[in-house]
Length: 407
Length: 109
Image (cartoon, rainbow over all chains, first blue to last red; front, side, top):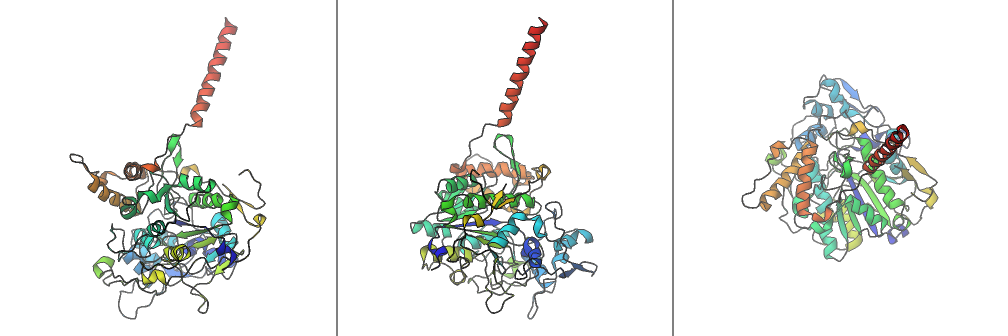
């Protein structure tokens, strides 16, 4: 076992909201051709049939104020370009502008879905992606919205759900937190504060309130060396007044929340680990996005082993049932640890020989395999999922070789 | 940060204009509220009315409802209100002003 894994005591996952890989990190390919980003020649047709190229003109706020569609039928249109379900249809990633235009945006405004950030506009994400490990092939688990995708991060499955509706767990698959605690380990979900709360509500907050903490508690746990073995962090999901008359901004980066505030949140989370030497050498931090939020990415989502569930045609809204055998659109994913060499790129589907596919079932899959070893009570898809800890090596980078953020 | 680090990346500030708690809620927040509303149903005491979600339009409204429900389900997460620095400064400034007025009055006298 590499020293990085041998020394590992804590895994922290920070899950942000609704941005695609190309939108946030696609511009990095010009700096490092091993990163599967944008050449600048990727196109999508608009409603007039004009081919529109990707543009490095993404804005922090105000550009996607009409929340781009990312529900199941909308994502189906984005992936298949409008070809209706049926045998032999091929994914072409040509329906992003069409999808945004169906939401009442003007022809001009609908082109914004092809925008991406130049790397210097996102100093935090860019720094982490280039200093540690970036995954070329991390996909959302379902071509659909937040709640069902986040369920994969907690349970390794969404229990057959492809939408935002409420669902109760009917099958004996415990959440990763319950698995850890039942086995005598420690785990926590940190929501930002009570005004923002959590997206994992019905099954866990109601029945397992002890596994929750606030972000303030996360910072205190980092400072006090009381961080659980596994932590899942939720950003702030809304703007609201803070204690003492301050203003708390949403930091989730969900359109149309300010992307810079999300950068600050990622930086603060990283700093909390980085500036505690004891924690820094024993922690792996995964920064990942739940789904693409309707924003363009050029990589066709690959097939995946089904988790054994099926969503009916009525549930998907496309006229065709979904057997959870295809992934959603690619999202940014970065693994941070001082045991990761600078500039690590984990190859994805662009490399047919050594590329690997990751998705949110890898989160409980990796945490379970690392802390609990063998554990049967989970889906076959989670059991066979890739470990995201493989970029950790034997070599600890010197402290002076690792950045901190001045927030 | 007390320790000095060799490699420091500056993080740009978010402009104050980014804050807007009157922003209409997204589909994501709407569904978050729906989930809490389901829980509220199951926790409702006799004679109490269920929160009408159609009246929650903005992020500020949503945050108030979420705070109420989360406090109910997870009282451990309650944050104590902090004393603000601004108030102290105001008080200090007021004291200084009052003192200077007193001095002026004395001089005039």
